[in-house]
Length: 451
Image 1: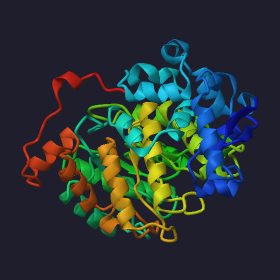
Image 2: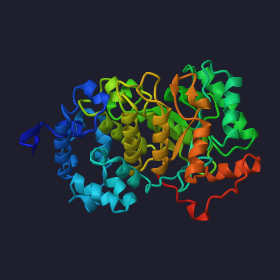
Image 3: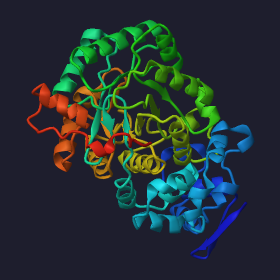
Image 4: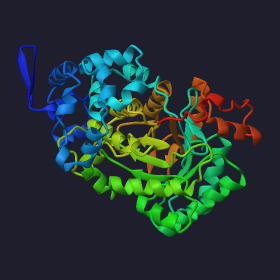
């Protein structure tokens, strides 16, 4: 269905919903590379004005990726709850923005929202809008620690090593624990996808957590099939990791299907290793992966990213994060684009009900620096980010990119008055690693964890 808008005496024509969403997206290099971005700032404004007047019901009648050929589209449509949508079915995208900013019950709306609706409203929001809405979304999950409670900020301790050396990983892990990192997960990106090395890393982390009774979870971020082999071999698997995308073709490029993810979740649940919860999945996403896989169907990268969150929420994950600047400047060229994308990703995921973290990061060939990352980190803290990364010195020597350090996470906690996960905070106090009085999990949260 075509959409039109006249602005400044010029009539702008958008062939379909997919084109309208792409033209309305704030400038980013990936959409330019794909040839779908607005051709001028004026056309972008015209598209955003058109989008603001678009009824939300349109998104239920016009798929940006065909239902018949894409299992992610089928998941989105088949899981949509009309009763939850009824409360906002009369609204336009612009009216939905106003509704969100007035303090509505977002939890009640979630089952009625599609990723495309959420992506659309984010495109007409300024940064403070994205922050103001997201900071009211509290998504709580648990395994051995409780993630996402109000007033809390968790940290993934990321002790990567270029040769998967156990001593080097142990040293980085100790460094992070001493600085209060690791309550989200101790998560290693292995240098290879070898089942034997993955098993060895899992044994080391499992032994560490058991010996010191650390209320956290471990994860080796190998491919899901490698983790399944480790489960079959008796490895101490806490979380199953997988990178995911917003189309069937993108997930196929990662070597996964929705059925495979379901199989992996069932396998992890069968181990029954959690102590305070049963959220066992860890997903990573990032704008640009669908374009890189030539599986974007002409849809802008931010809308495709939001569709990945529909995949994630179907599997009740403990953790999800966008590796926002990791894919490179071909998709997000500079600090300004990375900042906008990070806040969009966090907003969309939280609105859809995910325990969202962001890897505040950039590659060394992007037009970005640590000042840009400090700014995004602080904005995400204000927006209620669930967790961030803790990398020794903020420089990942295995993946060769710049992220956030253990000290960056301490800065954010101290500046905004945020605390670690309650179980982990109590452990830090017990081990003499903090002089703060631990605040234990309130009894009212027992049995009330949601995703």
